[in-house]
Length: 388
Image 1 (tube, rainbow, N blue to C red):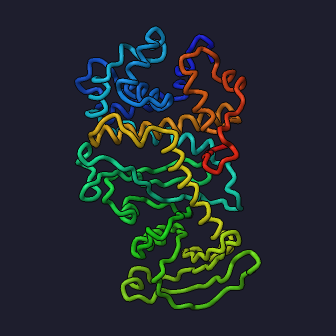
Image 2: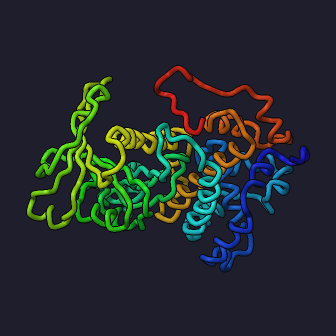
């Protein structure tokens, strides 16, 4: 890297600007725009994410403090909070959503060889959602309950890469199971989800797509056992059964056979009942697959802890979605940099270093080699690490 460039400019060299311009053109992002391009908008918001800025005024003050360096960081003029607020409000959020998908595609290729922790060649996706509470008076478009607003991030996470492949932002009212209607399922892939997604008509769509699901059975699950398979009970497995549904509507929605696996966790003593349409994998691997669903929970906790997605710079739906997608793009960009530079630090450590060095002109690889790995409270179970 050129030592004359700021760390921020070196970081942005990992961004495929040609793909960004294609996203802007697709949604006419520069229609009637004379100053402050979509690229400058992205840079401003990425800077805010990387340095944990609290408000638009905060962003403006910090960028103007380094005014002499802004031109070489990609900015072509002063950044004003009103200009940035207007851009976030009116420029199509899909520009940044599509661009985040470009980065996601790059990151998934880089992390395709990561270890799942158990032997499985197929792609594994974990599906879940997280709710971000909002003020109803400020965000009336995101009605959740009578006196409360919220948005939901419905996320499909590639478990091997620890990278979100699909994120759908909705109001808090949208039930999780409805999101299954939005997906095109990948043949041969595994979709791991909790029992909030159990809808047998929708699960049968996964079966028809030649994909596999792993979920937990509800307490009122009604079935008829066809036959049982032998299990090694020393591993925690209690039973492995082939069953059919007996409920009137459930049997019509899902007429095929299912596999029901009972497993008891030796550490907690808790008993789990799993349902899957895969009849060939060992029962213990199915249990391990469901345990891998924790990665999506860890992803939610991590981004809420380290990215600006719990407090927003604008109140409109477009501004909220723009900020969320740029935050995801920054997360994936840092994951790409970590892999390409072969950095030993966790994503948390990389973000901490970047947050205090963006205006420096040290070569980025040298920057990270000079710093010790940052592990704040590394012995504490409350500290979250992704992509270590």
